[in-house]
Image 1 (cartoon, rainbow, N blue to C red):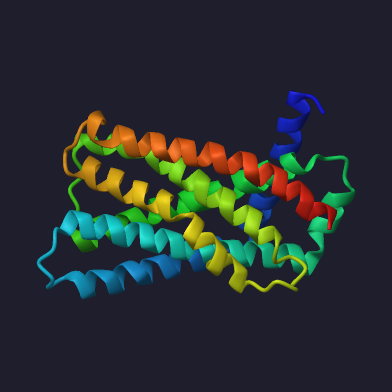
Image 2: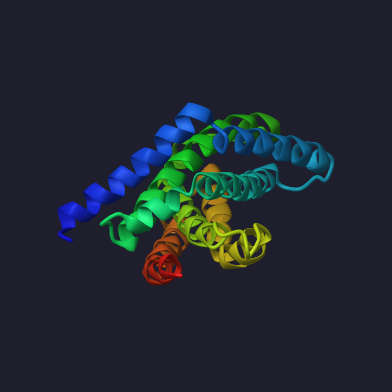
Length: 228
């Protein structure tokens, strides 16, 4: 398949998932509510600790995003299992890499919606500053979201047949995402504390390298999963 055909196929898969999610919201809405609850509990728990509020708020935000992403992945792939939609994709003349790319893109868009919505209570609950340097969060946030979506889409496919269990997502995904969450928290803390590019460059490049390395492996593994 040509490059244009690949991106067209990936776009069709992503558009299908986003259309279904916009219609029912069964993945994004529960993830958003759950993430907001996590932030609220964290804000109360850390209110009297005396710790740096910016660091605590950034950590709580990404914990909420990670847990919300797990819920979104589980609900999104449950829909694939119930409707046997993945079986139809297996029969379509679409390469596995395009299917993974489309599903990763759709999940990343959904997670960005959740993150933008959760940013409001995070700023309010933890009284986070929003200086001009917060712009450094944009590339790092996009890279972190892409990495979460990529890993979630890959391991979500393993739960479609129901034999491995949805617990696999939580058990296998979070250890893989440790470098990503560490980088996201550090960039967030530095950016909201008035840091410059030198303070966030190393972690941002780590996130980019993480996505590139994991993406190459995920494309290969996803093809094997579809052949099972």
